[in-house]
Image (cartoon, rainbow, N blue to C red):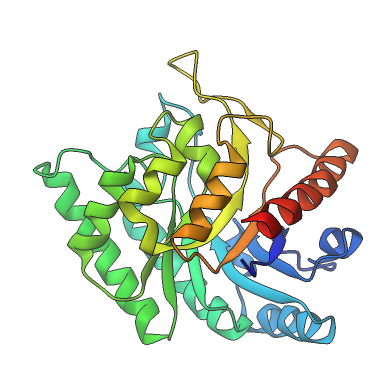
Length: 274
């Protein structure tokens, strides 16, 4: 496997986006922003030039959206992604704007969470989401971009069903193996049997299954949770995955930096052995 290792880099207007990755000696990142107000051509040009000057490869743009976002099992279904009708139109517009920003950045894809996609294929809400996603994906396709869905609130089978129903060639998956566990939605290794050929990017993250059924499971350092990274990386190699491993550690400060450094060394070893 000749996969590259990177981190998530947060978009900033007033300072470099790449300080943390430079600290770790990395030159690969996934740019992330939840602030549509920053998505201007002027800032995209600035970031692109800085990346080019520093030999930095930005895999994609992880784009959030306005409105509430509750990462739990109670408010989550009515606040996350394109699923809630109250926020859908505005978020489609914002993600279309993210597409223009991504094009100017020079990245190849826009990524986001879809939300709690209905698991019942006959649910009328499922059809409404298909229409919205198809509209957005078509817009991104016309910009020469792919549209990747980060795993999380939906089962692997439900996500595959959505992708097949939308039926466009520029769709893919940003597989966050920990999210499948944190949300209790699936086993990441088995999930590769379901949608493996669609996986374009990996979030290197780990965690435990929920024990409080009202709250997500706990995220932990890669290698300490239930993802089973040695088997996961080996299975990715078996199915021919050639994308990047983007480290995501959802804490901050010195402990985050320490955990990222350890994860880089750990992933390098696993990838070399796969």
